[in-house]
Each structure stands twice: as structure tokens, then as C-alpha cells.
Length: 156
Image (tube, rainbow, N blue to C red):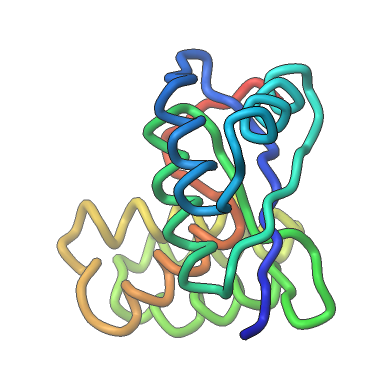
């Protein structure tokens, strides 16, 4: 089994600390003290990392942390390139989205702002009902792994 490391890199203004502690304990197998230490690091502006038992567990943990106000993403690794994954997902989905979304995402990609392009496509796919299917799944997965959450304001 291959481990996947995630990092908590952004916080929402409103956080549910007890829920975040429970998520860290359940998904990363941390004890209460280790989870509290990780939580304190995140709140203090650090980018604490959690080791998870594979990609699916990492995605599930990232998704579970978000409602608690802690935004996480896959940590940089030799086998993971967030930008390449996002661009591939956008290219797979863009033909199912309104042309203005495709044009806007293309312009953002050309400017090097792949995170905003991905957020735009995920939001458009969800709003337009095109979120289903393989293209929508690729967009959602890429966004989850990269820590891109459309419409969420973080504090750093």
C-alpha cells in the first residue's frame, strides 16, 4: 500500500475544531495529542502534513476536513503534479461546458492561473448540470486533490 501525504494549507474564517480533530484522528490514525498539535500548526499558519493510506483515503480526508473549515490538498510528490492533473481534467471537460467558460478557462490557463481555471470549470459543471459523467468526475477529483474549492474564501 502506497501512502499519500496531504497538507492543510488554507483555513476558512469559521472553523469547527472538534470536527477537524475527529477527522484527523479517524482518517490519519492520529492520537488526540498529535491531532491537537496538527490543528494548532494549521491555525498558527503552518502547513501541517498528514500521512494517509493511499489516494482514496487522502481524497476522503480532504473532503471531510473542508466542512470543518480546513482546506487541504495532496502534497507535492514525484507521482503527483497538480497543474498537469488540473489541465488534463479541464481539457477533458471543456467541450461539455458553455463556450464562454471554455474561453475563460483557456485564457486563465494561458496566464498560468490553472487554479482559477479549474475552479471556474468545476463551478460551471456543477451549475449547468454537466457535473455528472467522467468529465465532471475528473474535474471534481482534480479540484479535490489540488485543494481548489470554488467559492471558498480562505485566509492564506
